[in-house]
Length: 456
Ligand code: AMP
Image (cartoon, rainbow, N blue to C red; front, side):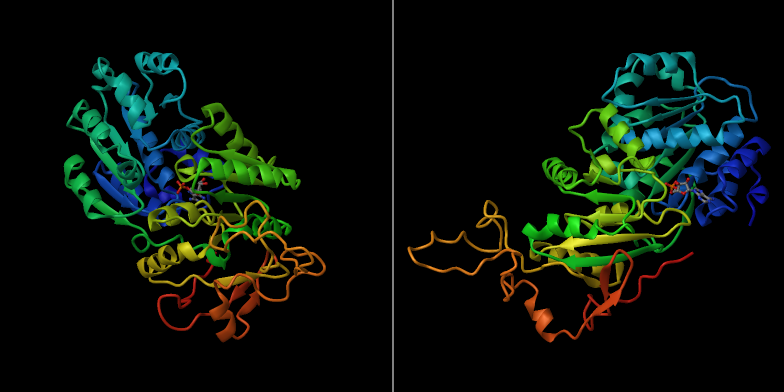
């Protein structure tokens, strides 16, 4: 189906064509005609499916048909990064239209944001917290709202924004068109749709809560102290050209970045301890290819829309599957393909199994070729992790076998986490790009590999 058949404004079609999109994605084909028909809509779609254009294109198309009358569309999204990215999309799609847009988010001065509201832009894109701070007393500016979009509603729920959203929605006109997007559809999400939407149409793309189909997934079983060496090892391969690394903590993100930079790998970080400007700069440098690796925490990375991410690496495996789905959706966007690699320690095995049960697919276990899985911990790190206690001081005359990867390195695997599999396993390795090896299907149980393919 061509874009032309969807009923969009000519100026929008021109911008879409200039952007290089040849045909609408499934969520766009399904959602755009409904939105143009002025229906409320629930869009259940993973990130990377083209959902931003699915709501911005028809809204801009309708806004373009009538003269400006103050703020007419309000998009609420969970993070500043996502707000900025939606704004970038809007500016591209509206470049042949005389429409104005403003963003509202925390961490920067309120004054220009308030000024933009008072001047009356056509479209406002906002995070819930800052919007609630500045909407009070300025309700009049929002009296002409025709469209309300709640983007990534499941994440807003997770982040505790629902009370703020309820208060904001109370201040908006009841007669409006509401569009609600979420990657997953839980009972709580369904309850919210009942509150905010009227007789909505539901468009669901792909299986619920299933990771993007275009992403090839793999798991490296590893002991905690070998995660950084394994990351560095994998990064020796040029195939990992644009790499987004996820860590659980801000401190962890900084630590990894420091080690990668020391190893000569250009790296930036993005997490909530960094200022808004630092975060945007990191994102720009990553997008422009000035840095090869971006290390991020979940919240900060929410909504990162960077085309061409070759690999997402879960340095720390996410404890809940929604985060996994969102993380891997950062690669394999729209019509391109990507790889999602997860480092899994013994502590993460339950979470991995839960993910596999949830998605009803196994993730293949792979081994890095040429990587020393028997390397010992750095002396300072020994005794901290599950790899065992610190060695006792050497007794006079005692000869010890080195634990590290020195030429006389150990012959016996010191870390027995996965030794059972090794014992029983036939070679499970097939070559994949990046020099790593991908395992063949694991037999039995939920760990069975049911075939993650690449499409397109
Ligand atoms: P989203 O799911 O909105 O985050 O979009 C994911 C990516 O797909 C973005 O980088 C868009 O620029 C891109 N995209 C959106 N629509 C299309 C399309 N019809 N064809 C190709 N790429 C698209």
